[in-house]
Length: 68
Image 1 (cartoon, rainbow, N blue to C red):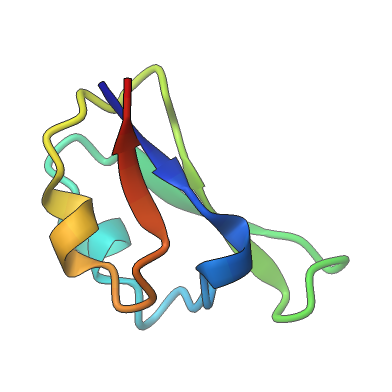
Image 2 (image 1 turned 90 degrees about the horizontal axis):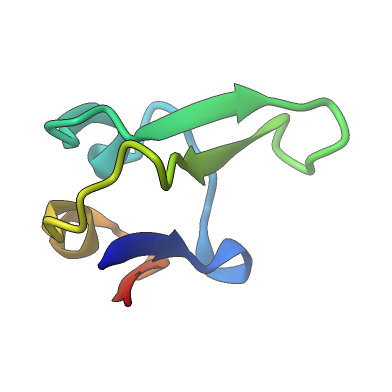
């Protein structure tokens, strides 16, 4: 099981993203990208993620789900 980001729902705000700040494995990162509307995007590293689900409860935009 892994966390998956629904990009269309993600506000991609570095300073507001609680999953980014609180992921125990640091599997959620922010990548700067000038081509994105807000200058960056949230990314989940599927190699690091263990599917614990903490991020699902913390995500303000309900943009993270757990998949198999």
